[in-house]
Length: 270
Image 1 (cartoon, helix red, strand yellow):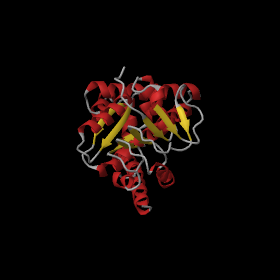
Image 2 (image 1 turned 90 degrees about the vertical axis):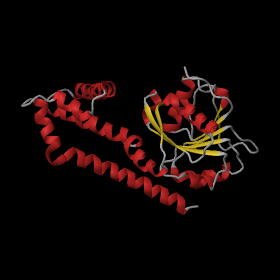
Image 3 (image 1 turned 45 degrees about the vertical axis):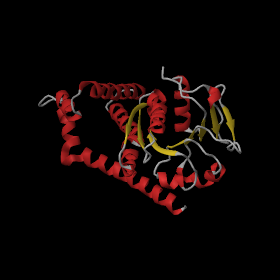
Image 4 (image 1 turned 120 degrees about the vertical axis):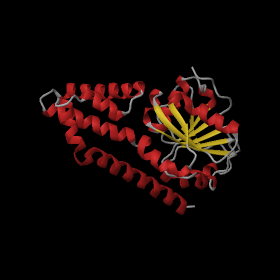
């Protein structure tokens, strides 16, 4: 169990990602329910003991303020937090730069974070960045994210566009691949539900082996593919003209470009 953090946290937005983080913090003992306040008029079901309000309490400030709303809602929500003075503000808003947030919501330290949905299982990826040299605040941000999965700091804030495309959006792309793998199996005659179970477990096991083996993914693929065998026949299709690499590169580029567009839109609204 993780060590608990002192003080109060206000979670602004308890949708898919905010809700997943909230449940993981409670399960890991990072916070007690009475340390948490969810600010979200649309939140319906919350863990027992967690309070919810429609708007931030006036004249109060939390130790940690975490923004987990849609980026497009920042300008609507920010005025309700303008008098808030959190010691640490953590934002998971895709594409919205720290300077854009600082211009709207005052905070002693701002840390940007990019988690992905598997944080709900403690198997996510969380990238962090802050220009602040405040080590205690950075340590708090890291402790906040540690129960969620792999946590790594970025030296350059502009790398968030790449992180958003790779690990932030990546689960969505992997799910598409799993669906395609299952559909391919069903096309070959497997019952659809069985093909899906096989596809999910195949990807799960392959990822676990890639994590544990220390070998590169390409090396592992070559271990599976004996010369003239079935795997090699399939890999020849994926590798023809670097088809799979070109498709994935185009997919990530599109996601990164959208992250940049969100950043530009947020700046323009300042």
